[in-house]
Image (tube, rainbow, N blue to C red):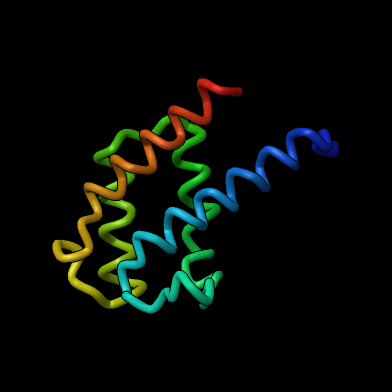
Length: 101
């Protein structure tokens, strides 16, 4: 079974926008907005976050996922990275995208 081209385009657009949000959040502090570098530092979070958003995970579940990733994968203090605030931001973004579809 293959995806419809419109669905693939929509998914690609969502990934691009989520990448933009992740890079602006920049929990590890390496993203340079002027150079758009490194553009893919947080791509490991794209798929898992989109899956969670699509299935309707709560802010608490998203925040918990981000907390674990920040702590275990990136080796940072999740409190300083404001994972709960970012979870709220991406939920609001995804809700707006879903309403406009």
